Amino acid sequence: MSELISRIQADIANDPYYKDNFANDGERFLAWYLRNIHQRTAVEARQDITDGQHDKEIDAVIVDDEKRKVFIFQGKFFTATSVDGGPIQEILTAWSRIQDIPSLQEAANEKLRPKLEAVAEALKDEYEVVFELVTTGTLTEAAHKDLESFQNQIGDFEHPECSITLVDSATIKSRWDEALTQELPKLKHTFNLQAGGYLFVEVGGVKTVLAAVPLSECVKIPGIADGRLFRKNVRQSLGLSNKVNKGLKQTIQGETPQYFFLFHNGITALCEKLTIDDKKHELVRDGMSVVNGCQSLTTIRACSEKAKNAANSHVLFRFYEIPQKDLADKISIYTNSQSAVKARDLRSNDKRVIALKRAYQARFPQGYFIAKRGEQRPADKAQDQTVDIVELARALAAWHLRMPIIAGNENRLFDKHFEQLFRADYPPEDIDALNRWSRKIDALWDASKLNLNDQLIATPSQAKYELLYAVQLSFCAASKQLDKVLAPSATMPAFATSADAIVANAAVGFENAFQSARQEYETSGKVFSPQNWLKSKDSLTKIQASTSMLLNMLQNMPGGPVLKTTLALKPEVFGLRWSSE
Image 1 (cartoon, helix red, strand yellow):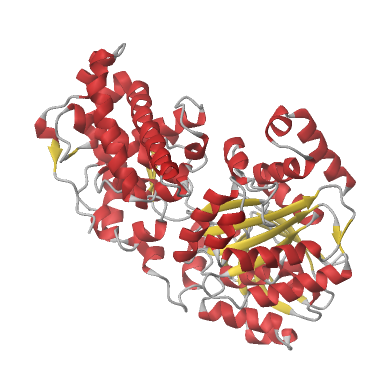
Image 2 (cartoon, rainbow, N blue to C red; image 1 turned 180 degrees about the horizontal axis):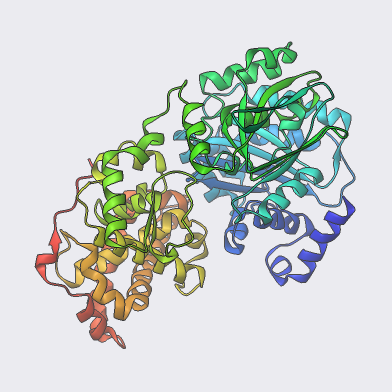
């Protein structure tokens, strides 16, 4: 993998970001990995890395509220050729330490302490914990045994779910290739099959391959980690504590992994084009997706070391060449009908969502409402009028519930608060207005025009909706209607003339609230975690107070009187806040 290492070295050497922000090659390599493989922004990667003196064997941390996962990284082996069992023991030490976070914080460095606060909150909410050992070296035989042993140990924890993954040169290369095509809707992969282990047939005019695929081959399939492989599936991974997934894990890690094939119902995989080479025993699938088997493949990946070494262990795959979308959709539905699907997976078919989708697309013919996970915008529809149901839920929570603190928790939005957020009679004009404000915030955010603290910038899934909340409060404060909520569509005249200024002004109030909270924590000797603060009601109180104070000061600021007049709207466009209880 010298070519990969040379490319990484060149990327690091040619980008001043790495030299300017990180103290050594180990940190720079990990920053490269976070940016290129985990798709973290430059600001996010800088905030993620905790490496240094008193890092307590934790080199980087990501608390991902959208995926409900805590990622903990070890990555000190850039250009190493051989890696022993030391790093595995360090990860085991890190795991034991994070179960006593107050003690760990006392000796942790200043970068790790606030991260640990966020980790503690995530563990309370039973986020999955994923350890990644990132290295360009090769593990020794003893280290591989340690890793396998640790995978067995850590997989027994139920609260939270835990896994450890070796990310070596081959895995980095595979994930990098995958990341480079992340914007593309298609996945392509070549399966190495065994002679006599597959059958090619044509059933109902559909090209079909039935194959006993080794578990070691399953680990190599792209798109498992980020869920893109399952974009046509009705749900994503349910985690290792799920009853069925526990059974899968126990078979892989038990004494009879060779019986996995006999105990398993099989995996259904679709592709747009299927090619088989009988001489090489290779199956090439283009435009690949798995519509039944998400739980199995994510569990196999979580037990990767055992799966790689499980001789004569296979799983049945049914590969279908299905270029027709309607037939592919039916296969996805029918092959998943044997097991229960949680309510949040079925929200796309709820009558309220269907009504909103129809009304929006009727009102805005160039618009499109994405209600299903993995659904793609048709080419003839306008991107800036495309509304995603998840983003809409977050915006509704921030605007009408005035609860942006739950915006990053998809489970709460679509389970506990679904009835309050989605109303069949909600005006399409208001959906369009929320979409415009959200896109405006995204554009200014991405262009770094908001002058927000890096710790806020590094938490976009939460902070962007706190900012939307501040935008709405700006209108309410200027109109002397702080106890009410206005219709989003009523803000469109102001949006047309002053959107950038309104968002920028709200960002000042947001930043002031953040600084006030941080100072308050530091004065009292407490550890301040920006990620946790953004989820607390204290953030709502401080943003409201800061926004009101800023509006009072506008009269004496350049351009302030005009902006304040623009924000002041008539009382009749205001109504009651939706209940969040």
